[in-house]
Amino acid sequence: QLRLQESGPGLVKPSETLSLTCTVSGASISSTSHYWGWIRQPPGKGLEWIASINYSGTTFYNPSLRSRVTISIDTSANQLSLKLTSATAADTAVYYCARPDYSSGWYPSFDYWGQGTLVTVS
Amino acid sequence: QSALTQPPAASGSPGQSVTISCIGTSSDVGGFSFVSWYQQYPGKAPQLILYEVDKWPSGVPDRFFRFSGSKSGNTASLTVHGLQAEDEATYYCSSYAGSNTVIFGGGTKLTVL
Image (tube, each protein chain N blue to C red):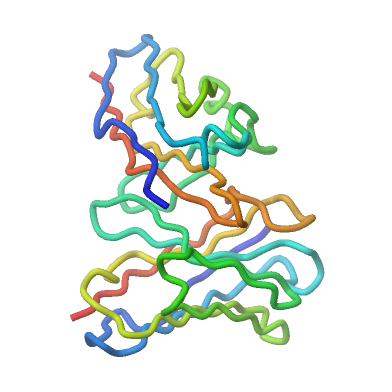
């Protein structure tokens, strides 16, 4: 069974870089053409898609975050990562990694989610 | 890209049907049949209920078969039939917005009276 587990610092200082890792178990990141994504949710607010990546490193970004975000993949570690530079209080959120069930390319819905990790910028 | 518009709250009594709307534009909801709906309980990750407007994902819990979706123009809708206490949660819509991007709605908190 696919399991996604986010990890990273729970507290980041303003202007610093927020860095998160999602460890995948139950499936190999490099074995299919799934796209793996990051989605965030500020406390008490709605969801926001951040970016997606596939095993070959093809990436898609939310235009509103593109200039500050880098998504990457480490197939040997079966992990994906997120870096968000110049963090501000507005980046305080629960960050989820997620994946569609669709395996033939990028897809705009997410069947599998991690439990999420709260990152506070303060 | 602006977030899709959902009513902040909705409610209904057990056994009733409730419909939640999700309003977008011709660049997202109206332009594509890739609307999804998610259910989220407090402190939990969202769970996919429907994709491509009205399709249930494989392996969804039986309770999600009381949920149906539709779309007309720039507005998508989620209907919950035969409301039950376990349906009390926050519901989010999302849509493909072109250029391999996706946008979400602000969420609707559903209360079962």
